Structures are given as C-alpha cells and as structure tokens.
Image (tube, rainbow, N blue to C red; front, side, top):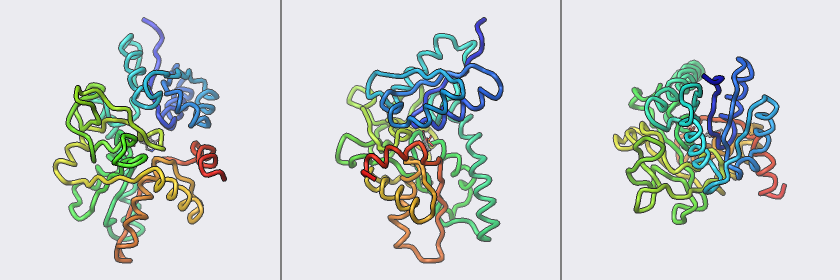
Length: 292
Ligand SMILES: Cc1ncc(COP(=O)(O)O)c(C=O)c1O
C-alpha cells in the first residue's frame, strides 16, 4: 500500500490553505487541484499552500476554475481511493461528503447563535450567507433551522447578470440534474452537461449546489437571492472602508444583499451575516480591477 495522501480541490484557495495547514501539522502529504485562472487570481493563497509544503496541481481544462478542479481531484482520488483521502471543499459530492462538511461547518452556526443571543438578548431577524456549493451557508443555517421566526437567506452570484450566461445562480436559474455524483439544481445544457459558469468570486462559480439547499428551497424554508459582480465589489469596498473589515469576495455577496435590504427594514431589526473568509487573497485583484 502507498503512503497516505490527502487531496482536495479549491476555488478561492481558502479550503486548500486550511487543508495544507492541517497536513503540515500532522505530517501527511497534501495535494490541491486548482484551476489555472484561480491560481493566478488567488495567488496569495497559492503562495501560502506552497510554503506549507503542499503540491499544487494546476488544472487547465474547461474554464480552468472550480468545477474543473473538482473533476480533476475526483479523477485523481478514483485512481487510488484506498490510500487517498478526499477532503471535499463544500457540501457537494456523493453521500456522505455533504453531511460530513455540513456537520463540521455547523460549529459556526452554534457559536454565532449563542453569541448573538448573549449580545442582543434575542435571535436575529434574518440570517444571511453567500452560497457557492453551500457549506458556509448550511453551517450557519443548521442551528437556526428550528427557529421559525428567523428568516434564512442564501445569496448566490449573479455574475455579469442573470440575463447573461456569465452567472452561477444555481438555485435561482438551475433545473434538477446531477453533477459530481449527487442530484441537485444545476446550471446545465439540454443534455445535462454542466454549463460554464462565472462569478467574480472564485469560490462561488460552481454549476451545482449542495443537496440540502435544494431541499430547503423546495420546502420554502430558505430564500435564495442573488447579487452581481458590481454589487459584490461595492460591498467589498464599503465594508472595508466603513468597518475596517476586508471580506472575501465570496462573503461580500452576502454583505451586498444585506446592504440592499437593510434600508427598508425597521431600525430595531437585525441581520446576522456570515463572513466566510477574509479578503487578503482578493486584495490585489480588487485593486487592479478598480485601478486603486
Ligand atoms: C471565503 C469563501 N467563502 C465562501 C466560499 C463558497 O463556498 P461555500 O458555498 O461552500 O461556502 C468559498 C469557496 O471557496 C470561500 O473561499
């Protein structure tokens, strides 16, 4: 039997850095598959992974982004599922991956709910998170699911617009299908092949979405909305300049939707937003894009 190795895909690189960190700590070989477009865009995370001793596998097929990285990582995993561990980066893939990831992520929801109660003496009126594959959102939502009075909102990437092909608003525009070994709403062509998708946030451009989100949409327990690249960039800058918090472009989608609706809410109403990651990885890209 070969030496154990952990492998994963990554879009924005956050998951890759987390895994490379854990592998460095316990001394296991780590291999991360990442699209060439994302390697360039999210280079600070790539540098961190290299420093941590991880092998980066650049993926040059398709749109060279997240979905292609998942394809590549699955193919590598299937070559040797005995000595390889696949640590998938979202609540996607075949059972039990979505459940494993959801259960680990739900720590965030447990802590957020307890801290919110302690600080405000009540639960939030709205709980909001961005949705790519859906892990940070389901991790936060899980603890609030029994709280019927708490509205849950998932925010998807509308990319360059819902009326263009350049978006990844899977729950908003997708139809039922299958991808990477699980059934879900899907952005797909007539033959069921995943469409090339786009978001300014590398971690959100995935044509499928976690199966539990699909159920929650069908049940009407979670409302799924979308914001576009420009709204995301505006929110990124606003949160940075008003609060001194530079959010990940993924998280900035949730901030953008909160900014959209907050003005119309009573002043005693509260929104809890999940900041799923920090924006260091996106700083150079945003500075270039906005010519700062
Ligand atoms: C900071 C950050 N937030 C959110 C996401 C989206 O993933 P998910 O929808 O699984 O939370 C990613 C994915 O890479 C990410 O890096």
